[in-house]
Length: 313
Length: 284
Image (tube, rainbow over all chains, first blue to last red; front, top):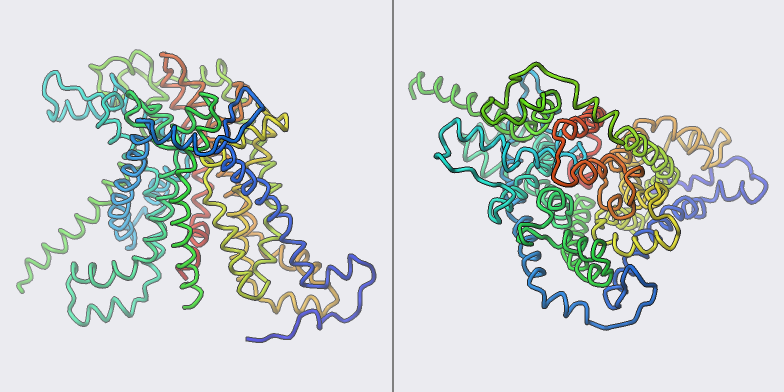
């Protein structure tokens, strides 16, 4: 579609440099974009390059001196047992939480698609974990998982699901601590995934549902052969956000377990924090946090592909 | 098929529907309900394992909130959060409103790519950048200062708000600006006097989103800030109130609840717009 250059619509020539820029679109666009791009380059691009540089140096908090040490940091990191535990945990937590989120969010979004009284209240309650600061929500879970006063344990004991003497220590046993962290990750990512999938479900044209009903598709067949395939591209977006947020998350582990017991629940981000900031080993911390980057690149590529497809249709 | 099973099946479906909702609302909202109960319970009630924890076994108390407001720096943290939030919102708007408009009105393939590139920088997580930042902030002399947060937080609010505003500006018909320009306004004048006033809903959405992101941020806060007087809420509560072996659960839960609910109420009004931003145009 071609439109006449809007500048041609200007009735009179404005005097002065400002007036000319205000009307010259090419320069106006550049001037309007430049500050934002500069801010992003200086405060995202530059620190990122610095992070790369640190990972090949021997930078520590206490000293300004820095020497190039090649791959020494990466060798040190890869030799460490904790690194492999952290990498495994990060991947495990991300995959399990996102599979659960995908299943739960689809079920919940379908339940929210129909109208019922009090829907706004339900929606408000469902969104709470996403909107409230994650660190505060995690503190709430810390209390729920408390070693002595856990509400889960009390409820299970009253329901006779726990025998006498049985009292799970949620954050003190490696397996249960992992389960607790996954629970919190599912809890905080489920609202976003649900509203995104709900938006996808609402955008399916009613004709398609009608046609399926006329053709006699039953409930399950309708769901698995029509609704789910159509909502999958949108669900993928929800999962991509979930992967980025969970894979790079520090907060849940920091608040709930601090990586304990004995580093069994450490993830890459928390370990980078503990050695880089608390331990003062900037180079080591930078090397660890760089392992978060490949996932980000992969997600970015999928996003670009989807955006291109959205543009074509 | 006979009529009876159809009725049964309908009832089952309705029951299943309610069951799903009850299950998920319980899972998602329970921690907040639990914060509320804990906030108003007396200490001896909280720590008596024989009591039913769901009920008030002794009359509710405001003690924990008094401790929170009088004996901790909670109010200071709220004030710090508001201070950083307001400044970050102003900075974000100053950068993102013009950028979003330029991206919406530019033509050509690379304008589209530039928009997506800016959006993708929102996904670069603090956990990749916080280690070099700790040194940069120290070099700038901003360590343990709220200004460090004011400087760094726009690095994630600007990308998302630019993307969000671009969507809004695209939805405004160009004819409006063309008409204003025929009436003698420059392109810039048309943007300021015509486009911005009718985009207030979009600007408001960007304000809410930027402010919410500030209240939620944790990683930079815990890295740059070292004295408790300069914490924001999201950092102060989990680090300073959870220190040593003594947990003041009642006060802590009150702190979490008070900081969460107002933001949730406001955010809820705008949620559909955020979803539109998040879905990258795949949902129309």
